[in-house]
Every structure is written in structure tokens, then in C-alpha cells.
Length: 184
Image: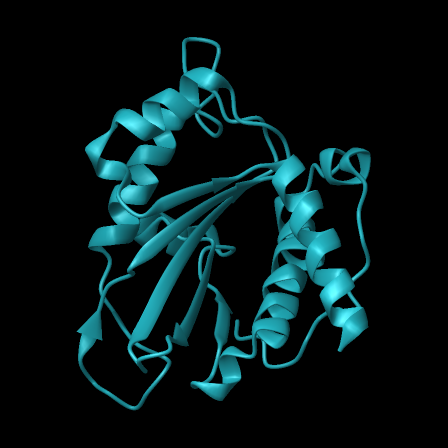
């Protein structure tokens, strides 16, 4: 499912409680994550260097099994090099340890990240028929990430070019980019 237009033309700000309250991953993806990505793309003017492509890949869970990616975005950097970023989205606290479930375990996420980096696709950024792989990965959760999971992430070589964005960081980013949109 390609998103060709902004979902929320005037991104609203969210409180930590509102972000925390999300229990539906699809709704969180559309209302918060995609809206933030669209605002960042507009504010940073990536379009001066080429198109920003945002697509759902894994919201159809049959696709996510193959590629470990919920949402993809691509852009051309300042040297006009294509960059492809995969995102795994959660509405649960990310933890490490025996109390973790299959969906919020950092060990399970490691497997999804590994699949994402191995997955080959034709870049939607250009007309090339060459296949490529992602260059980076974001793990975004509406909740928090416990210290054990953060330590696991920082000490595991499979987590190359992976950034974690938790609910508190999302609230900060949304406020920051909402203010920058107002100034434009």
C-alpha cells in the first residue's frame, strides 16, 4: 500500500499518555509514525534531493514474515545516494528476559532485523531493475524499552545501523517537528 499524500496535513502533538494508550499497531502506524515521517520529510526538504517514498510493507503480516519490515521509507541523501530504511513498529514495551512475550522480546526483534537486512527488493526510488537492501533500521515503540533490551541491542553485532525510538522520544520528535512546521 503506497502512501502518496500526507495522512495528517497538520500533524498534531501527542502527550506521553496518548502515545502510551495505543494498543492497535496499525492505527499507531498511520496516526503517529507515518504522520511524523511525512512531517520530517517536508520539514527537512528531502524532496530537493529526490522523492521520499513511504510504503507499508508488513502491515499485511504475510509480507512481514518474509522481510521483517512494517514500514519502509527511502530517500536520496545530499550526495544523491539512495537510502532505504526499514521500520519495525510495536505498541508494547520492549524487554529482554523470560517475562517477554513473542511479540515484545528483543530476541524476536533481532530475528526480524536480521530478515530485514537480508531482504532484497527493487528500489521504488528510481526506475532501476537492480535489487537492493535496506541501509538502516528503526525500531519504534509507543511504550518504553527496558535496560536489558537496550544493553542487548548495543552489544549485539546484528544490530548494525539500528536505532530505537521509544514513546518518550516520539513525543519529543513530534513536538519538535510540529513547531518547525508552524515556522514554515
